[in-house]
Amino acid sequence: MTRVFSGIKPTGHLTLGNYLGAMRRWAAVDQHRADGLFCIVDLHALTVDHDPARVRRLSRQAATLLLASGLDPELCTLFVQSHVDEHTRLSYVLECVATDGEMRRMIQYKEKAAREQGRGGSVRLSLLTYPVLMAADILAYGTDEVPVGDDQAQHVELTRDLAVRFNQRYGQTFVVPRATHPGVAARVMNLQEPTSKMGKSDDAGPGIVYLLDEPDVVRKKVLRAVTDSGREVVYDREERPGVANLLEILAACEGGDPGELSGAYASYGALKKAVAEAVVEVLRPVRERHRELCSDPAYVEGVLRKGAERAREMARPRVDAAFRAIGLLPPV
Ligand code: AQP
Image 1: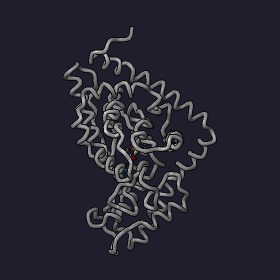
Image 2: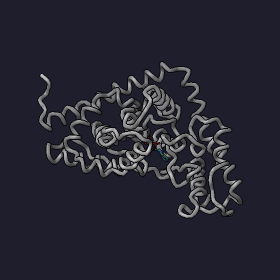
Image 3: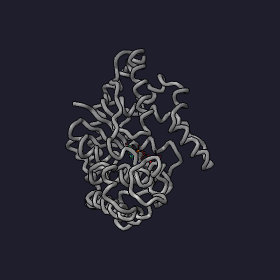
Image 4: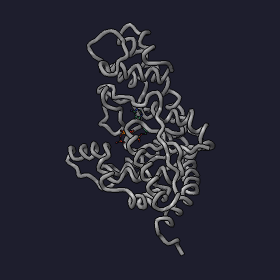
């Protein structure tokens, strides 16, 4: 069975972008057709300035929201990265095959390092080595497929390079994974800045729809979305990114093609109303299920405990094999 690994970073409240671009597909498709591992990658959240209590809170919330979105612990493995030591064990070994130059070429590193410096902070070494830990997350499980958004494609490419290099130097150990991209909603854009991704670690603002926003808040954010001075609803990503984003969100919520949907709306106002209601409806069951799960934290903890046990069993043999292959003595 195809093995799929994907992660979500507890760096902010989860957004409509996370849901439409990733979580919904994990629950509706990936966990049914594949052996799915879905991970709250909390170690990655430590690579930038953070509040420890907030990371813990967001990790719990992400697990609850993933279950609320339909992940079924009977069908997939849901766990927290820091609960499975194999990730950091393997990360060190992979640091011994990766190069400094490779790390510095990562676009996300350059962007995030500049952001940290812009905020007057220093750049953590872990931000530079983050793609190696991500490679370890993936390679530890013999992953075949990694569903990712556009911005993570370079990291999966690096993961493939490291797997191939390790296998060539030290013997066949890792499966070489491939990235898969969601067809719809690959990149939900910020409603106020439609040329930037709707990112959960961006400063909170009216351009980001959070999964736990009240319906009226969702409506307000969508109705205030930035469009342009035109009047006619046409789908043109380059010239009219705001309207294109709304059409793509609508298509992701209701099905259909953004270009074809554009013909159904006579004004931006009508389009925004339709998008607002579509988003409210898509998020309604998630919010309701989330509320139920919050009243049973022991259930969520149990899922994470079993998930970590299963993940550990899957990862350990391959990570042990990598230790032996690269020259480390087995424990006596
Ligand atoms: N706007 C988006 N549109 C489509 N897909 C998105 N994803 C995230 N934002 C959008 C997808 O959600 C999954 C988990 O994302 P992540 O936790 O790895 O990172 P992020 O949400 O992409 O992170 P942010 O918000 O940009 O900020 P940082 O990196 O600082 O936490 C991924 O599959 C992602 O593609």
